[in-house]
Length: 263
Image (cartoon, rainbow, N blue to C red; front, side, top):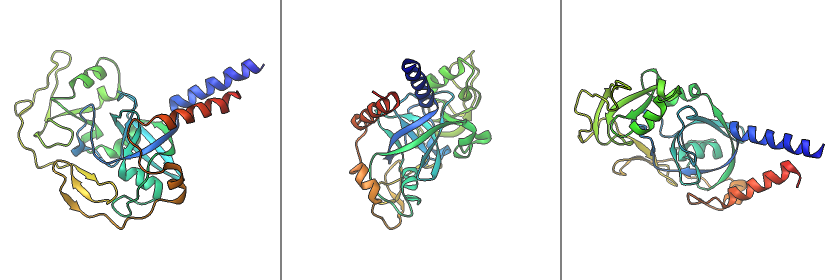
């Protein structure tokens, strides 16, 4: 009976991990996307930078802490940490945007849940809320999504913009005759490195809460008055941790395994 109980608990834990669980969330300042999602067409303050590779279906997650919840686009891969946009992290911790009352801190345990892509629709600012991809630099990712029945395969738009922070290229929609062609056709020659200034991307600066240009770092607007981190946060985090610091996460995983399995 104990063995049966053990495997039942293990199966339940595995299922829970597939759908959601606990992560040690850390603040991330600068927008990026490893698959070429264009920051000028999504809410860069609601992005998840997580260790797993970017999926073609599960691109939306919810993250909760102390009764507050945000939805995040999971469109970048970190080197080990569960980073989230600084503004999202600040809101979850304090209840305020980082531009209003910026605070500091590091890894803190938060609950996540995989969410349907429709839950992140408001974070995507394109016609039909389709994922905006770089026509020049997203084809490897897109090809993997088009090779089977996926959400991204059915819900994407290609733009003739070269980089995720939208500083090069032309802001125009391209077409792709897949699978006949593996290169998009655009009104202007694909990949033309024109300086692009009409679609700026902004970051929220860690500590200050300043809104700054992602392309040159210039301050666009000043943040609000900084506040001290909540006492429980300062006790848990001990300051901002570096990416790839997995020791704490591993320790918590071992503790969870011990708790569930009773060994």
